[in-house]
Length: 340
Image (cartoon, rainbow, N blue to C red):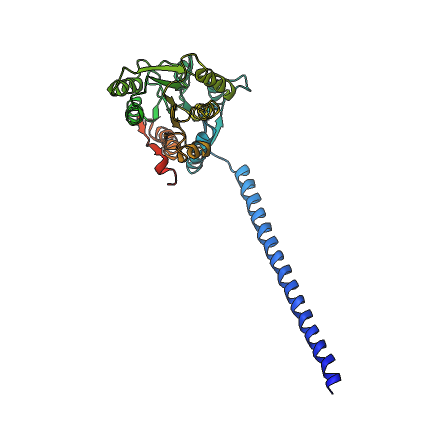
């Protein structure tokens, strides 16, 4: 009996193992089938959404024209503005002149006038001839909303951004925090074609520099108007290699300039000697602020710029007028605030 019982027990154990193995295989297969089903449904849904967007028609056409320097910044602005425009039955497109194309902002405004768009959102940086193009578009009944910098001597409909006075106060506060007895030079790296000397921002910065203890501090501006990051990088490296050395405080007014200045500071081993006041909340810049390599960075609220720009166009379309100024929030981030 014992001899016949042992083979039977072995056979039962082997059967249970086989059954368990089959159950596991079936469960794994079912799991993969479920995942494939989810993936298929999401793919189909995404494809349908894309197709619906392509087939959707809009009653109005808006155009955004901005520089190519601050990609992360403009991607956020454009996405918010595009969604807001779509909610108002308008299609928003974007044009960005750079060193790879022969077209500039004036050319793009000409295209907008010829195609008869319903509104233009324009980043104005003091470019020569652009005020005349703004006036030309306005004369054709196309409202122009300037953002970041104001073309207040033009026929623009509204301005969305932070005033030079507000910017000056923000930069002045940071200079007072960063300047010490070793501070001799402050350099503003501007992306504007117009000079800052008569600008309210420059006046606030200059005033803060003279309030510091110690010898008189020199404040000057260098304009880097090229859209090519390679040109900006070369210009900044030449500043660090100059005979007098780089400034103790370097104020950057856009993302590309901040990143190039940060890289040059690392390459020339001048961390701590040069204090960068940065611009933009890109991952690279925020990481540098978090590590204490860049003391502070600031940026205008991208969501508000996108929303207010479309809001100004919609108000003009519906009522024939809109507010002259839409003030957006200026966010300032130091190392303590990078996590938030």
